[in-house]
Structures are given as C-alpha cells and as structure tokens.
Length: 315
Image (cartoon, rainbow, N blue to C red; front, side, top):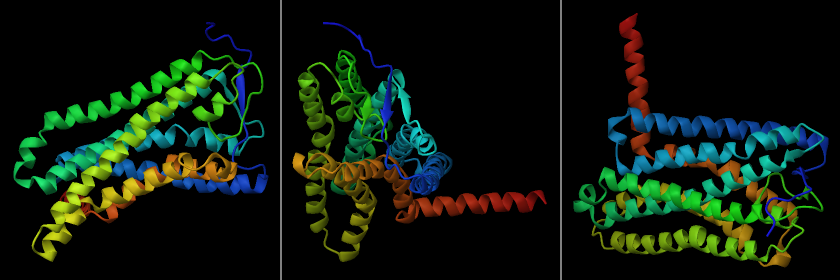
C-alpha cells in the first residue's frame, strides 16, 4: 500500500458563514468566549494549587479537566478566528492532520476524565469512610495518566490510518476545522476501514465512558435515596451536581451530533453543535464549578482577603 502519496497540499475550510458582516460579529463573539474560557480555566488551576483545602482528588481531576479545556479550545479557536477575518480559509495538509489528531486526543481524554470524576463522586458518596484510603494520590495520578494515554491512543490509531489514504481530488472541507469524518469524505481511496475503526473507537472511548458514568450515577442515586435526612440527601447530591451538569452539556451535544439518523443532519446545525462543545463547553465548565461550588468560592475569597491583607501590611 502507498504511504502519503497525495496531490493535495492544502485544504479549504468553508467555515461557518459566507456573510462578511456576520463573520465579524462571530469573530467578536468567539474571541470573547475564548478569552473567558482561558481565564476561567487558568483561575480554576491556580486556585486548586494555591488553596490547601482544594488539595483533594476531586480538584486534582478538575485541574486536569481545566488544563484539557484550555488545550481543547486552543486547538480550534485560534484558526477559526483567523479564518473569520480572511477570505482564503486555507490550512496546510500537515496543519490539518495535526489539528485533527490534537482534537481527537483531547476529546477522547475528556470523556475518560469525566468518567474518573464520576468514580471519585461514587467513592465519596457510597464509601465515605474509605474515601481517603481508596482515592489515594497515587491512584488519582494513575487514573489521570490512563485518561490521557487512552485519548492519545485513540487519536494516534485514527491518525495513522488516515495518513495511509490518498487525497487527490477535492480539497474543500465543509467545516470550520479539520474533523476526521469531514476529511475522510475527501479521500480518493477506500476509507471504509477508517470509518469502521473510527466507529469502534468512538464506542470504546466516547460511549463506553458515558455508559459507565450512567451506571455509576445509578449507584450514587441509590445511595443518596437511602440517606435518612433531607439535608443529608441534599448535601450529597450537591457534591456531584456540577459534574452532572458538565456531563449533560458535553454528552448531550455529542449525542445530538453523532447519534441522529443520517438524513436528519444539517451542515449548519452540526457546525454550531461542534462549535458549542469545542469552544462553548470549555468556557462553561469553570463557570459551573465556580458558581455552584462553595469550596471554590471560599478559596477565592480566602485568596482575595490574603492579598488585601498583604497590601495593607506593605502600606
């Protein structure tokens, strides 16, 4: 089989819209979302490191998620913003495949991290007396490493198979970034093996964690219902409410994108849905965990008071 023999040296991205006025509006909107996403996730990472009360497995995984969201948004947003201001929405062949592998890597890793966070909540609610023993720092590091390795493995397998294809016809991608399904459609060789492997990888890396998350929350809800007092039930539920919202937003968009019948797909809707979970979700995640989490609020308040006190002392 021929390796990397291709006549296509660059791809053309159709983007989100052809209207110049709308492109300017979208540029401003996406730039604001991207900046908020970066600031929010950096804040979560810094607060989790600075505040001793947040040196727990839950915030260890949350810091991983925040770092991932920074990378996830950055894998798409900068090029999308550039293309919104340019007439020629081009991306090199190498740049397209790099963007594609990074996007798959981070997307798969996020699915696994959400599962790790669900397991953390399961142990905290279902086995609270053994929580510190089970969720040992070494185990948390192993779980986090497994998530990153799993996401990377998924991306490399699909990327390796995609690089074996030849691209010698159309180079126009009907999307605003290089997404694997859109790129495979441009191949002038048989991509059936790629689509089959992509399907099984999606089942394993995307839907597998989702099913396990549902099972985990089945046990969590069962344990919460056994708590005798309403205050205890409310407190237990509040510890996993933010995670439930994040999982719902992330997987809700993915299911809308990929689990619908083929004849119901509309290019514009698919692009906006992809944009939401690649740029919008990284912005919402830190907001959800900050606004709904008393520990994060207290840590932020404590840091603010400490800095104010230091300034007063220096004066």
